Length: 136
Image 1: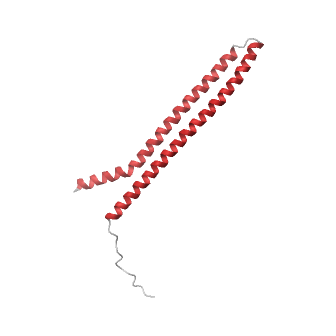
Image 2: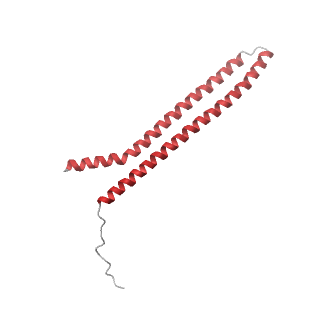
Image 3: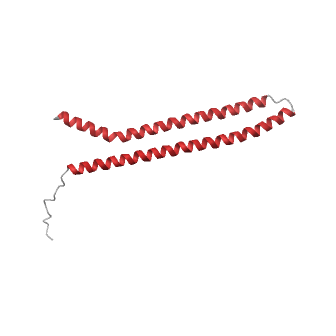
């Protein structure tokens, strides 16, 4: 009998914590993806900056300064486009995460609703057996 009670308790506990486990797993996966993408973006930006510094050290005359200025404008345009692309990708990741969270919350809510209905069917409603006998 105690084994049955413990098994039932374990099953109920597992059911209760399963939605939280799924949500925590989703949050962790999202954090890993976002962090990885941000690290890659930072690496790209650092490489661009390092390349520009190297180019600046190679300036020796007015012509190379003019070429550097031209390349600098091109690099700023490239940087702007890269930042827009990174913002777009991060936005898409965020929207996907939001969608997955909404789906999980909906599933958890439905599961709780189903569980409440199952529990309500198994319980008999208690009847009020006493009335107030207080006289005014």
